[in-house]
Each structure stands twice: as structure tokens, then as C-alpha cells.
Length: 532
Image 1 (cartoon, helix red, strand yellow):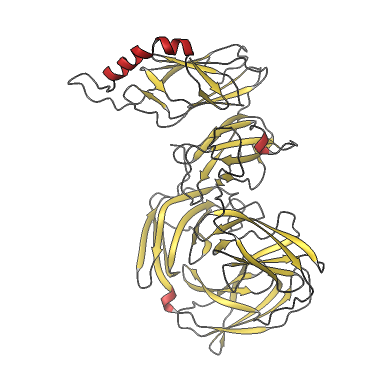
Image 2: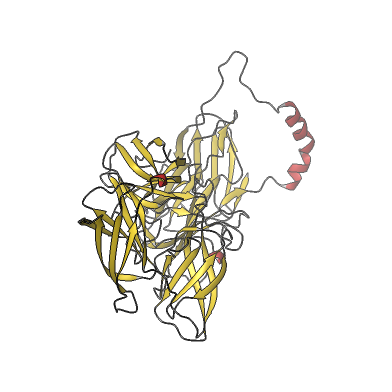
């Protein structure tokens, strides 16, 4: 008989029985250390199969003292901590006898739905593990909650996180989540996938964490944590990226004018959120360096100490973390003498577009584009944030073209006066680009699938319109490839302030490298994930 403590089964036999049988147990281990099929028999490679359960799945009005019995097609063994019950049940017991697994609670609660997960620690005597968890749902009341959530948990380097806990917490709790166990929880499989069933139609605050000390609670000071991008309800999906500890830090900070501060970092970043959680500050990567973050405040007072909190940056090594820094605004800040904006190339499937990056937040920018002495019509302007814009030209822009960009914006969001006009001449360098060819292995079942390419050269999305995509001009660098279904039709991942991982995300294993003068070819599959 094994006893469940916390969220998984653990414990053992009584001390007296252990002492009485210790000598015989040693002899048994010595004589039976190797288990093998009878001579001449084919090897057993099939894991156990669940034959029946008592009560059956989705049973209602289950008595409060009922045992849950699982019958398999062959004798089984199970590892400690392989059984999970949500909501959390402390002190439950389980034991294995031949082909039968029995789960015994101290007592189930009235009118409650329970979700039992038997993890891949269940195997037969030949150590053939089950390939996916066994899930069992029942209720002690007249109704059963059938709501569920699912998603993926990624390690800081975006590899799948196996064995991570995903917990749901009440939105009205006054206690911090690291001081209480989750109301409902489950654990990810080897692919980082989780599904939590048996939850009511309510909203919850979700967290993911690696429970290194098996406390059943996230330890913010020592464990990897996946923070939520929003509240979640039954029927919704959410993905998490576990945050590392102290990869990046702030080296120094300074005010560049009375509204904006600049933080210099130890390491480069490729993404920062657009604004602070309280919406009192706007954030962006400095056009001067990706080791600098600009913070534009709504107001600032001389000789006042400000605490700058930046949540959810993504570092150049694809890890995510938070940054905190305190900065006092003195009375000698002056606007730096610098250009109004800079221009850089941006790939498209039909040529090169132009990314215009302003050195301060702006609004209502007006652009003119000339190729030599000829004006080029700008067919579309994509606003990435309040400092970066993509210009799409009527004609293809190629390496070696001499381009003139003129911009006239207004200062945003705090000073609405015009900040003048400026021209920038830009000649794309051919050595900055390689060619990328992508082929999809399976037919695309979703109409709004986008590629998300994150790497040293860029981080943008491109709609998947056909089974083969060729990017003639693609910035050289190393990339990770993701895919997402554009649920809100914005063409941007997690648009509308819902968080970096709000929309359904697909993950492609491995990195790709784009080199100058080479055509990089890859084959990927972005068919919607299924739990395997």
C-alpha cells in the first residue's frame, strides 16, 4: 500500500514489515534482478492496456468512501509519484496487486468533480511504459464538470518542458500563489503538453513551474516559473515559457530627457513588452543598440526615485525574464543630439521592405520614399509598435538600390507637437541576406497559420499561404521557427496586449542558419498539435 502525500503518491510499507522482510527482500533482489521472457518467446514490447475501471469513467454520485479500481491486461508496476489527483487530495493511498491498481482516499468531498492522472511511470514487468498518461474523470455529485484547458510548457530555451506542473488558482485569493496549493493542477508529458479536465466554468489564474522540491507550490526564488499572460477559463488554451534566473541584468541607467530613461543591459534582447503592467510607461528596444531599453514615462518629477519594472523580456539566447531597476531623475537631463530615425532592411517573400525605427515614440508619421529620383508609392505601412514601422513599396526593392526615406511624425504619447522632418539615405547591402526555402510536410488545415521567426536577424511573422515559401532576401543569422494560428486576424502574434504567448503556438524542433550566398532549405510540419 502506497500513500499519496501532496500531489503525488509516495511513502511505503510499515517499518515493522520492512524489518521482518528485509533479509528475504535482499535475497529476492539478488536472485531476480533481471526479468526476461521465457526462452524462445518473442520479446515483450507492448505496454499495459487499461481494460476497465470501477466505477466507469464520467460516473456521477460516486460514494465518498469509494475506492477507484483500474484493471489492466497484464501485471503492472508503478513508480512513486506517478498518480495525481485534481483537485488536490492529501493522504490518498494506492496499491498494485497483479493487474489491478487501487486508489483509496481518506474521503472524497461532496459534490465535487475529480480528475485522476496516471503518468508514464506505469509499466509492465518488462519496463514497457505507457506512452501517454491515463486520465479518469468522475464526480461525487449529480453533475460533473467537463471543462478543460490545454497547452504547452517550454523551457527557457524553448525546448519542451517535461514534468512541469500547471496549476489553476482562484482569482479572488488574498494569498500569494507560492503560499497555497493550486485548486486544480496537472503535469506535462515528455512533449511539454498538458491537459487539465474536470474544471468548472470559471476563470482562474494559471501558473506553470518546475517543482524541484516537491512542495506542490511554486518557489519564485529558486524554481523556474511560467507566468500567465491573462486569466484562463474552461475551453481555452495557454502556453507557458519558464523563466530563467538572472541571465540578464541592468548595468546602468540614465535619463535622456524629462520623459524618457534608458537602461543599458549586460546582454542583448530581442523583445520587450510594449508597455508596463500599469500602463504608466511605454517600453521599446533602443534603435542605437539591442543592449539598451528605453522607458517613456507619462510623467516625471525632478529629484524623484523611480522603480522601473520590465516584465517578460526575451534575451538573445531565447530565454525570458523580468528586470528591475531604480533610477532618480535629476535636473540636468537634456535631449541627446541624434537623428530622428534609422532605416534597416526587412525581408518579404517578394523582395525587401524597409523598417523605419524612430529614436523616440511617435504617432501619425508621414513617409515619402524615393528610388533615385523617382518617387515610389508606399502601398502599406505596418505599425509594429510606436517606434518601428514597416514600409511596403509598390515596386520590389533590391540590394544596391539607393533609397531616400523622409518621415514627419508627432511626438507620442506625451507631447503632441511635431518633432520635425528628416531624410535618410539607405542602400541595402547584399551580404546581409541569404535565401530561405520552406516546405510544409502536411497539408495546412487552418487558413490563418503564420510563421514566427525569432533569431539574431529578426523576429517577425509571415502568413503561410502555400505549401512552399521562398524568401529570396532573408537576413543572415540563426533562427528558431514557431507557428501560430492568427485567432484575432491581426497578423501579429499575441496582438491586443494579450501577452507574448496568448495565441496557440506550434514549435519546430531545432535551429536553422541562414548564410550569405546559400539557399537554406527546411521541411516543417505546422499541423495543429495533438497529444501523443
